[in-house]
Image (cartoon, rainbow, N blue to C red; front, side, top):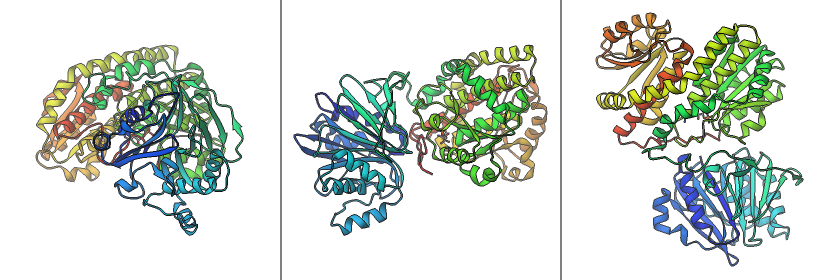
Length: 607
Ligand code: AGP
């Protein structure tokens, strides 16, 4: 997805800060980069297709003069990734510049209207219409702020916009509808960005904007308005707990590996959820007739595991649903007695937010689990839990998956206790088990990183993998497959082991690696039969099991031993670690960049 970044300083050049910020926003996935600044009443623009370092080497972003500017990483949605389509985009006279994240759905009709008024367009993008719309309103002699307000009311679709103009060169206008956008406030000047990581080394004081809001930013102040009626909105800053160091790689070659190794630390944070919210959410879940767990990608896999966990600990039926299918699949069933628990690391996934909008209109209760304070999900839910994983910049979700699982477990425990489904000794047992997760994960990291690198090399040339499991580790199989496919581009199949005979086993032939996730949680006995079936057809069995499970070890071609007697409910958190490492090393061995996987972005903010 695109990322925007804006800066307005009390003194000095904005371009070096804007360039550094764009580099930190790279994880979002992009194909072009550009910066515009204003100096002595003139607009300066440098932009091109390519990675930031390449474009910066060619154009020298830092030479742009002026203490205010806007910057952009473009992920092409309308118009090929070529120089003319890169942002910032300008108006006819070169007095207005705009950067945008989102999609202007009615740009074609707006473009026709503006062309009929004599405007000339350079790009094929939807965004360029915004610059000409603002220009059109400025021609009417109204203020820059009102010109932006009026322009925003003509736009349909989603947008995070930053707009500057030589007409009023001491302010930046920020407009938000759906796409994330927040302000950063500091003594040296003020910032705005799609993601706080762009300015977090300058300030941790942020003001998230809500959808339908606009901010006017100067180097020393900000004001927020509703775009619908222009009314002022009072927004207090929040304190972001992340520092740039946390968001840096801390010596690891990639964010993904850093974040895999960060899991024991982030699980500690996840053990300190805000109790009043756990209580409130358990209360709201308890009152529900039907509970849906709605998410996408890895977050959906945490919901698959959670469906077993809520049943096990609280005798609650919680239905995991892929966010993009929710409205079509269950829309008509949702009513005032329904509760929808949205799970989204970024809190900005468009499919999840679409589901939220739909169920709110049905008067259902909307709850949330997210990692990003100030994200849209935190503002569309009645109550939410922050999973507290810290910033996750690798496109692949790793540490946030573990935190989501632990968050679900704690919520399920609160609910089970409230419903009288658990004795005090059972509650104490689980609480004690949860406290063990950081150390169990730390041990898995210590013992398996080198081994998984070796296995990645051994199986580097294999064309297709199977991942099979039973019980709540079906989610682990799904997640391992997603990691291997999205990061190492290796096709694979994941399924409940009991399903293999219903079709997928026809894919098995000599040398196909089949990964079995078989902890000693009672499912491993049934897994033995599945392992033998696959081996009989030539599969090579890579088995993850308890260190003392000699029977499985004998059946395996490769045995990955994990600590015995891990409480069954914790096994998805521990058993996924070697499989995350396997996907990471497979990608590196293939010469791919695990932090910038092909065709993917960290947060899918368009439907
Ligand atoms: C996971 O590795 C992927 N990057 C992707 O599937 C991700 O989990 C999905 O897009 C959901 O993102 P969210 O948790 O921010 O909503």
